[in-house]
Image (cartoon, rainbow over all chains, first blue to last red; front, side, top):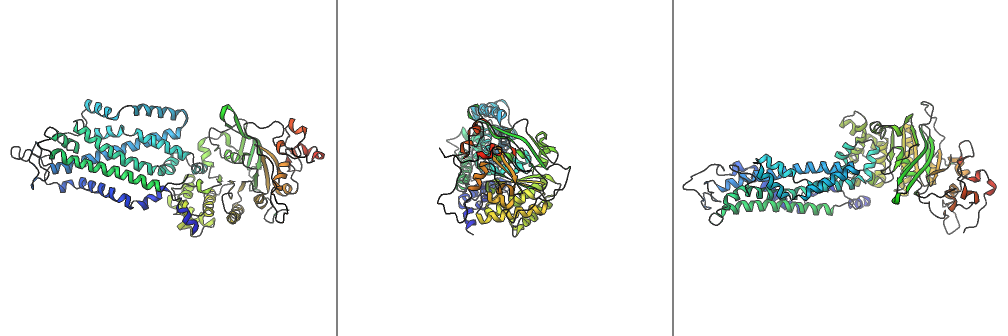
Length: 291
Length: 349
């Protein structure tokens, strides 16, 4: 019994994750994110109007929030509540998928570098330094200005400019794992490199990747909002939170509801993701295996 | 002299007649700081017959573990096996095999049990998964079959309620159970040859005996050959049929276990035996061998043990002794074999 108690302090990270998902630290941010995701998924049922339909170009233009239109209407007399609800789908899915893309690319790159070692690793990491030296926003603006990005293009652009940090993180983490004896033991049983990476090393990356993912999603939501606000991202007739704010940017004083509500939605999503990332970090830090 | 557990070597199943493992002039080098080269293993040769248990003995830093890893070609880079070495396993030249062939041998025909099961088991996989993986990698067994075999193997290594234990993670098991898991992992495919690198060092004394007992049973059951690396001569007496003593990257003495204990011929072996504390000893201080193993970047000229040897004389400083024959299977790397009259303790400096 005492042996079991003492080994609990050595509790490892990944198995502990399962037990901790319900812990209090994670409950609040997960609930907030869950609510936002639910809203996005249920938008067709929740939205009172079709977000793309011009209701009454003469009578309902820039209609202030009222009982009929809780969040008002925009310059094309479309219901802002419906647009914000549908916008959640675009904003959240663009950010999530883009981050998934960057996680996959970054993990492959970083793991490849760590596994290759030697000169190949050096070359890959220097190439990464070069990529990291380019300001991401600048790259986004240039590409956004040169090509008319559809939603898919936007996802790719955000995903393919967001993996450098992940690659660095993964390379460091894999390097650390490669020095550990269990991998030597796995090789001694004839496990091939690829299987070793996927079965033995990747589970160890779960903690850092989940933290990186949630903070990445937060960043990407605001990046997407920024790009769409500047007109380089999602545009008419599709609504994202950023593009709704763009619609309201010229009438900020008179039709404040056009920028305030999508802005609040963006804020809520970004806060929820960052909060989750912090909470995950705390959970993993307290579960850290002593080296 | 021999322990009641020591068995006569099993009659070897003669496959091709030769030894199962033949290591010849094995050298392993590690680049060290300042362009120096550490020759951790510096030209050792030994053989292991089918079904034989050989103990590799020596203190920390003398090259035992590196020898073990080189048998599986797992010397951690930038360390490497120096050209001119040869390792033959069951007729295969291990040093010329490709990665694919090498992998098909590791874990399948030749397996290794590590010293510290806590670090040698992956903390994020269940122990059942880790044993089943060996089966999956080397056979065409399905997931379910491999799992069943893993559970059966856990039962064979003496773990109660193996079906439940298989689903647990290494940190949920005690040290002794973890080592049993390591043994199950190594033996699940019934390899012909198992290397155990100080398998009991990290365990409580009471558990050590159980693990040794288990290894002996498993060896008797499967007829595998065992290379047991240890610095514990008590373990040697219990387990070995033959002993290879290493010092400073070289084999300094090689003998059947009874001959070694009865007639230790190298002063280092003698020192190791003298250092075993005995019940009823009246002296206050434990006997030790003075000094430490020299650095592998700079092996001394002449005999590498002379700095620590109670018998060293002029010849030892100038001439490196060869491995000299004493009995039919007993050899020692010491000038005293030729000049036994020199076996006179000099006063320590």
